[in-house]
Amino acid sequence: MTLLRPDSSLVREVRPSPNHEARVGAGRPDILLLHYTGMSSTAEALDRLCDPAAKVSCHYVVREDGTVVQMVAEARRAWHAGASCWGGDTDVNSRSIGIEIANPGHDFGAPPFPDVQIAAVIALGRDIVVRHGLRADRVLAHSDVAPERKRDPGEVFPWDRLARAGVGLWVPPAPLDTAGPGLAAGDGGPAVAALQAALADYGYAAPRGGAYDPATAVVVAAFQRHFRPARVDGQADASTLTTIGAVIDRRDSLLEPRVG
Image (cartoon, rainbow, N blue to C red):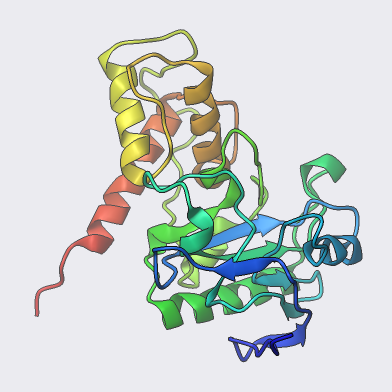
């Protein structure tokens, strides 16, 4: 077995998983993908991530006490994203580094993430972002790339805190009582088509065609879970629509070439 050497100086424990392979096509990773473990205990999650029969793995696990565990070398393709898509690419595993954050998740009451754990996620995330030159808009949730299957790391995850520390993109979401027309299931036409195009422009695998169908609602809910977590209902109210526009504007401003 090849010795797994930590890629980050923040690693305090190495527990190699056999579940990995060569990256395909993408070369260096350009996405940092965040998950929660979604199991009743961290020990159970670590065992599963090392089980060849489970066929799942990740690059890092961050324990509740902030301990960083490395399981797969960053140069290798870990099996954490599953069936997923971002920006039209369906092999998210080949272009991402995955961090599993120890937390039982929605099925066990969606408890808050301890401060010490989030501090460790920030430190590790910043280390990865700097070493790989990752863009802010490429720090994503599992629910972003697999909205029909996944909810992690969930609406209680402090994306704003990460972004303030230089990990990810965030804008203050528009208040829930923002005035203006919204869109909902059953709607159709140019306004729905524009919503779908905006979500796809950011990277989501949003349907096209201008019908507010169940698949569109699922993607809207994923966006809300990340960027407008106060209410996750899949309905594109005025708050959601305003926040989508602000997120895209913020991304575009970060991509503008700097003068001087």
